[in-house]
Amino acid sequence: MPDEDLIETERSRTIEKAIATLPDKYRAPIVLREIQELSYEEIAQILGLGLGTTKSRISRARALLRDKLKHYFE
Image 1 (cartoon, rainbow, N blue to C red):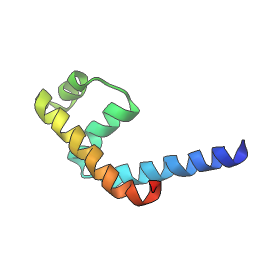
Image 2: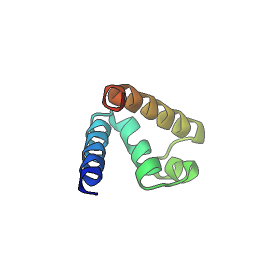
Image 3: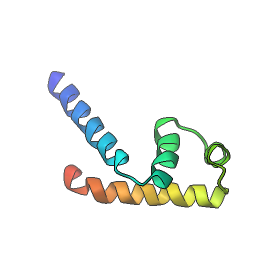
């Protein structure tokens, strides 16, 4: 349905914009995890971080995104 496609496109753009506002140290891990669907181990290796730091940054990025997007999804 065209309306659903339009809504999904708008939702995707809104999420992309919110991701773009994240500090680099949170943006890179969340993109690698949620968009490129890499494992935590792969992300840690790519970014040269420890596994705990990687998980922490992804968790923090998710929290920041939830906060930035809460008004949109209410």
